[in-house]
Image 1 (cartoon, rainbow, N blue to C red):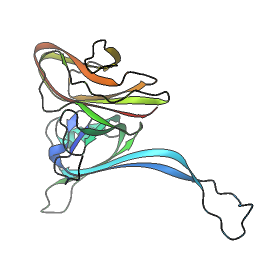
Image 2: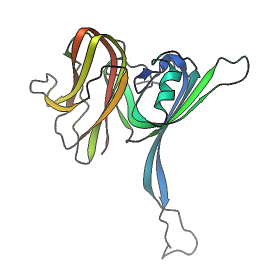
Image 3: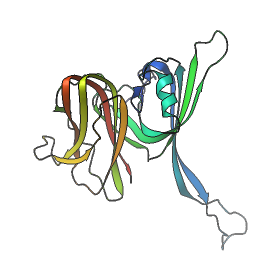
Length: 249
């Protein structure tokens, strides 16, 4: 991916797409430095600090324009999410199929709204990672409505080594129909054609706007991955986005 300006950033939290209400997103991954400096037995003039990695943390901050009125609006979604842990997916340049994605499971720790007279009503929120931050790809784009059972494009995310995991987020953004139900499954195989797919994880069936995240532990030698979905109901239609990435277990 070449250099670019931030124009088409996508932000998904739980079951809501915050993109059209956001104008700033910052994602931070940090490893705590722990001081293990000791005496230098051969020098009396210089001692250099020695550090080792401690705890790792992920935080995300976003802000934008406030709206309310239904579950897809920023106020309704973030007010309900306060203190809860759910999936967070950020795509730096759009969320097309196969696009770069950063994802984690995070705590919605703060939500702020309001400003000065004459301002466009603002909001801001902060999330703290409850799982490792992983870097991967979009496995299903948010703008494609699904009305029947199917499967996504196969992506070569890589094998999962021992001590590592594949993390997958799924954000169900809209639901229509009578008794609609969407079940998303994560599959792997050792070839792009998915001739002998293996089910690695199954999300809880979604019947309303919602979000989920799953962890798939290694070792897994398969390096090709996709999502498959089963849809039932009368006249069902779903918009959802799914992403996956490798990270430490």
